[in-house]
Image 1: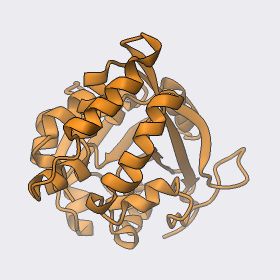
Image 2: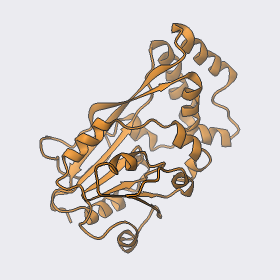
Image 3: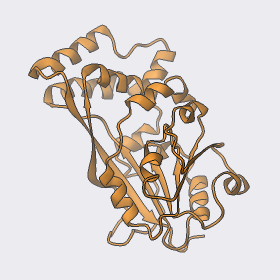
Image 4: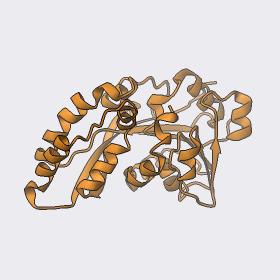
Length: 265
């Protein structure tokens, strides 16, 4: 998976939207302690940076050295380059000791994971019984009726052959992803919860830069296919400029799965 993001790591770091503060307030309100958080698949460190203002220490792990190169550096965040298939011994050495982590987060990344192996790691490091795991994805951008009408066939037809199969888990809003954890206090399920949204102000070039940060865009490019053809760009430009506003608020709906480890071993 990491190789899909190596070539556009800098663009990924610069163009991906930041997660809302309310998301982290909700997640951390479900944790009993704020000593140590593990952000898995940390990418450019967006979630890790937000967690660093709440937790005493944050560990961000990533399989792509290029992603970590552009990650947010803060005094209480430790980044580790790890193998996708860490053993328990490697987990203890590079991440944390058994039952010492208060919160595990996975932002827009868990659909890439070997879930049975990963869940064994999560259950090993989380404090019992109240350690929390929170994973979320965001789906396609929403701008307005005109722009979205151009985007939909671009996403579902033009770019579809170049997405990895795991992308369908995001399209399904993490509803179908295996999540063997208990509901947190105050919840009657583990979600997905859809109460959060990312909002990012963009101009058209920023919108295109976001599209170019897709793994599907890079895959297509490697196969000699330019998804943003002159015709596609012109269709987007016409729709974008229809209201006379060059900058627009782009919304990305978030879908959150959250649970506690219980006494799982």
